[in-house]
Image 1 (cartoon, rainbow over the protein chains, first blue to last red):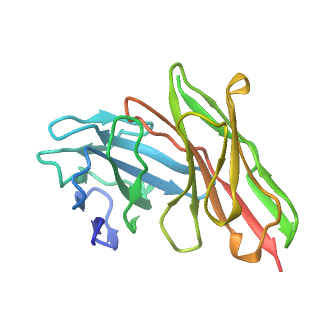
Image 2: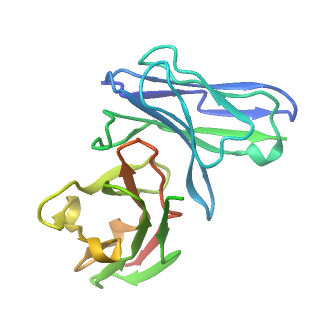
Image 3: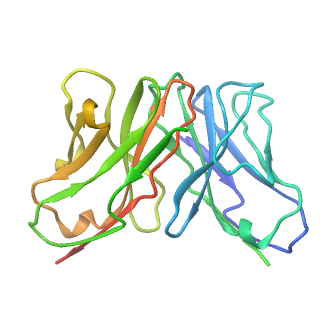
Length: 113
Length: 112
């Protein structure tokens, strides 16, 4: 069972360029999330989606956008990358409704130079 | 605004020592409570969870946590840690709106 699949695993990006991190789940979960993990700051929620067609802002949404066209996919886009967006990005999903365990992808390491 | 606070940034213990990691949250409504663990080089995985009922919940690998509603706390405990418990631990209250935010994490180092 694949669970959550993230791509790419790692990427080096020049500042000012755009980038989309892909996330796909095969568990038919309603809710999906994007977090960034930085040393000393833990995981911070960027955006989330309760169900297909809806999205919400988390703690650190600036500079990021998401879409949820269907249940399975939840891409994260950086329109114009900046060095402060260097981080490890984790996608997660849950059944939703506040009761579900989160299942995480393996992470995408992004370096913005 | 909702928030979650983990009191200890880095804890260093010797094997067989007892562990308690603090977690306090500030949420307006009902929340379900989780502890996740991240072993070196891996993604987060569920350690234990509390939805309702007995406020003392047991998870995997001998971990347990106690929900104290009056203190808005959900502290993680283990009577005797092992070297393999070296990891980062995250507390996470999950409200019904799915806006799930994690604490900053506590790094646990267990010396053999």
